[in-house]
Image 1: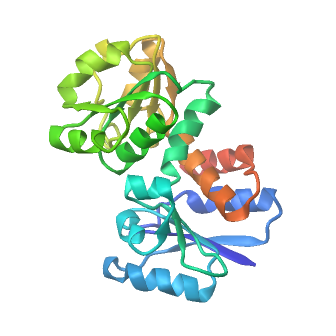
Image 2 (image 1 turned 120 degrees about the horizontal axis):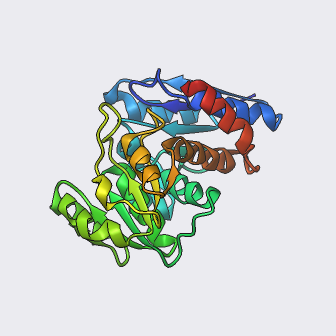
Image 3 (image 1 turned 45 degrees about the horizontal axis):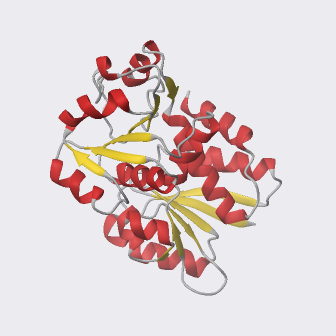
Length: 268
């Protein structure tokens, strides 16, 4: 039996175990998926231990995405993003690192029949999720505008992303009305019923993806829906980053419906 898992601290709240377990069961793969919660100072030993014990693959969550990046051989996309959230342990050679958050963004739009190539996209936030979204959308052919509370951080990210431009949150007033795609890559809307984007900027030509998945219907998504926009819950981004990891590990097509059902049940 192959062993997979997720490493984080804390990690007890993770919904990856039921999602990935449903995928293994549907594809009749003899595997189990467990949680690992090392102390923050012990992550290097944890990765070494996983390799020594024959762990087949790991997801990586807060606070270890950047730490693990330094401990694996990152693929080109993960190297550009600067963070790893999925690790594969080949029989020979060093652990391989990937960032599947980027695929979580693009596959969410694609699943909802939203084109990316040639579109104008706005990414709110320049942290880990914002970096993944900006690179993913630019690589898929979108023109990317990054808006962040700290302008310097947005400008730094934009300098790394092909063709991207940047501004503070006040730049949303000019960027959103003409945009085709909008990604909230911040945590705004998770703890309180707030939104990073004023409702009056939203319009019916927009597709809005909110990376926040609890609650499922954030204020941003409610107001986007009222404006006639296409809305995409953060659950889809969570699902598709997991689907991408499953496919990296197993080289098999992920059973999206089974994993989606398990994820919805876990979040109820």
